[in-house]
Length: 512
Image 1: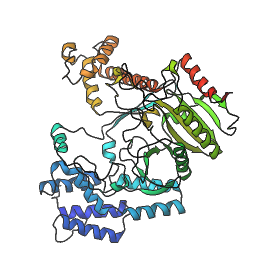
Image 2 (image 1 turned 90 degrees about the vertical axis):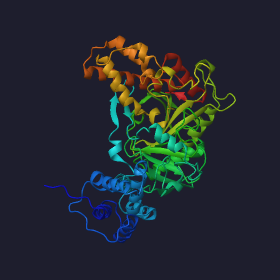
Image 3 (image 1 turned 135 degrees about the vertical axis):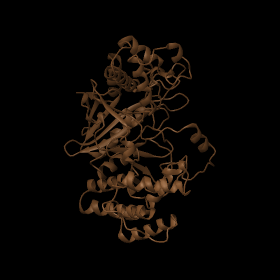
Image 4 (image 1 turned 30 degrees about the vertical axis):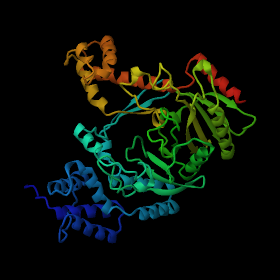
């Protein structure tokens, strides 16, 4: 059967039909959008869509973008910008999405409302599932709970030419950051993601205007973001606990948490107050207590040290007001707590102690707040952080260990994929082991020299492909566990466990 000749008018009709069928778009709005697209492509009249419609990504979007590049409507490096632009034409408006979300929440359930927004985000390509499905993901079994490890391939690395073009672009102050609500509809640039398909829902947390949306990167199921309407730095205060618990009152099927508010132990965007949450699947949320405590001052709150790799206080209660009070009490105490014997100094010239708080709700146990104790102090021996991965682990993960990793879901850089393949080639003997070459700083495996030496010593260089890959993955798994242990302010040793228990006792919490 001869291949059908591409026709841009038919392709645009296919896109319009897809939007009406999959994006909950109003028929009149689709007629309007279709005419806008005809104008954009300089067409005088429409065509009929194919029946059945082609595949969305490969059969509708990509051919339109290729046509646009061929006909000088956009440059090759602007393909993603142009794709998002044309999707913006056929998306339901931000206000329409909010109305639909609210109607579903009121008439059906809030879970069905979030499912609606999530589905819309996927089918509009705001969440780029074809890219996300490229990620390599596995489970690392461990004694205190399994970790989830992902090599992030959904964001392709840019070549030097692309980086140079981005460097030469004029810098602007709008939007102020990638989390600001002003990103809705923003066209983006080579150095800034387009956001014509972003949709957000206004919510109120602690009587403040915030917004709920999904993360375009989806590091775990239903990965969502709550962001302040005001562009202000992240700050962990007692009001943070109120906002987190307000969120789980609105969305009890999700957990929600905040990165710590200090560099090294915080997330990548500390300039905008925001939370991250989603389905209750992150490993830390399913760990039991290691030690139980109670307090006469807060009799309705269960207090525990979590059986986890870093230092976590777990608070549970049906009494939300009392839970907020004990969390605020611990935050104030930890901000000012030092333990010189365990390397913990609350302050030097600046603040070092803070927490990563996570909230959830369960009908049986009530509200839960996990407080991960963090400290970002550095010294000459640990310039990247005393409670941070040591330099021998930076070949696997050098970036800050934020809320997602601290809860047991590791997002590793995409570069590792090809590097692992190259290390496997060495362990199978397909590539000769040459330390003189590997020790050259220009070698792509230079950062892995110590790991390769250890693996070659332990396993030799005559493994089959499967055994070699298993050896490398096991090394990465072991490193992820060590990274979490590095972030523990109280180490999982007899000395560290005693110090952690003594800290709680100093707050007048009695061990059960």
